[in-house]
Image (tube, rainbow, N blue to C red):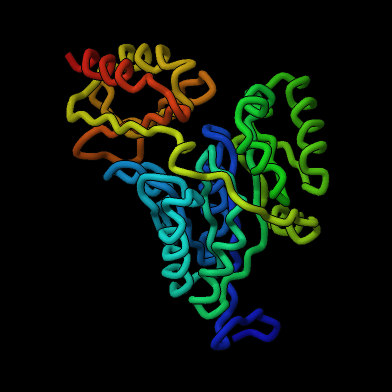
Length: 315
């Protein structure tokens, strides 16, 4: 063990723990891929992510290089119904030979219970988890409209030491300025950066986290009742690309997010749809079937309509 290395219980090196939060489609997974690529060979990293479906959509996109992926299936890591799943996942990761754990929060998760859950996980893991802070990523194009609609976005900002205003390459300058002003009002102690594709050297993130005065976490508002509804659409067929894009375009205003992996015109593709923007690109991975996750607002009654359109598209 090197001189100066922080140690926890049983004289084990401490594991740095970070949270990455932000609304659906803001660029969290892209940011995590950047961190993975930058730190591979320098740090031993574990990611804790939420998953839906057997194809491990986020896990598969991050699972490259020398990283460990831990997944909680079917819901928010901070939801009261998954409270102990989250704690158990952290406990298991504390046993791995990693330097850092980065947790990815779902788009509508209120991170208020975080420190309490980490305290519990730490107590049963030999006190080796060192929570460093939260990084919130916002979409410069849609942030202002979303902020007034979803209280969780405000909570994510309040508890964040670092905020990335992402996608500034496609956002009007006025929207970026408005986003910066509103974030400074909500989280005055947070360090704010503007980014394209979530690119920011991780040493700048760590330095900013060290200097930030972090807000005290409080009682969470995550319950099964206010969780977004999730649908999993599955097919083994190859879908026409143009028809699939029409299917996504018809979902504008009905869904918070569409994300998945499907076979389009004979080629496997990764699909992302949020904020009315469709992003389809060739995938590095193939599969036995297409799986598309659709996330709807809490209380939505659009699932039958979306399922009917999905079935009709397949003929």
